[in-house]
Image 1 (cartoon, one colour):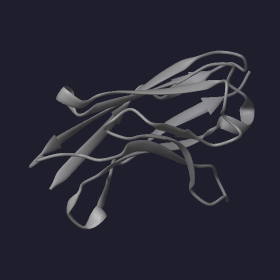
Image 2 (cartoon, one colour):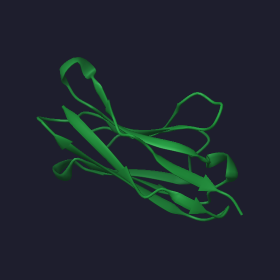
Image 3 (cartoon, rainbow, N blue to C red):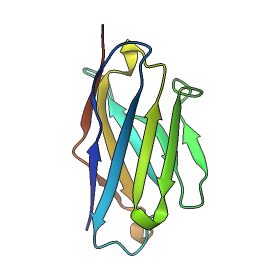
Length: 117
């Protein structure tokens, strides 16, 4: 069992920045990909960014150039640096960790990001 725990959400003005953190704990042998999804009210959950254990990254088109994902494999921790935030970035952000066996995704409980003036 892997337990990702997010932190760092909050209220920020448009154009501002936030940094989300996610630390995975539990019975961890190894983790493949870690990343972030988000879900805005009334919308489906969507991938924001992901990073493999070797450092390859993938971003949603809507956040490219504004968000940066990074990772510390030794600490099973992933960060999401969010700059130039827009009101449409408002959502609950969920961290996930994918383990090699069965490709199972373990999810955090989410952290709310609100971009508003």
